[in-house]
Length: 123
Image (cartoon, rainbow, N blue to C red):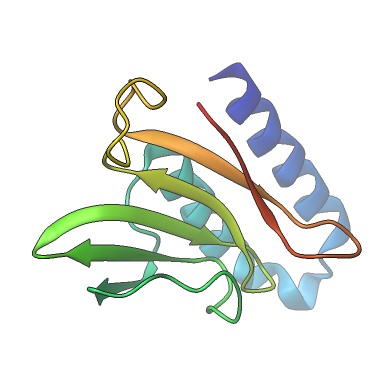
């Protein structure tokens, strides 16, 4: 929780100092997105995708998508300001309860300068 609060505080400080006044109108959108991500709720810009994998990029900025398979929520994915995935919340154990004893659980995504993105360890 401290890590998430620190990240949110850092994001707010950066936004306040870096966003020109002309772009200040997006601040409520970003704050609502960060709150939704922290709480695990849908972002204000949200889509439900049925029986298909979720994309890792090219999503609307500061948005989320739910993956629903056979009527059951499987995953919620959050996208950053560039439409790239930054966080997954998985609502099952991927069929492996020993490796994923916590349900739901989260995975952060990492975007290296070169090469494909990768999903981090669950927490």
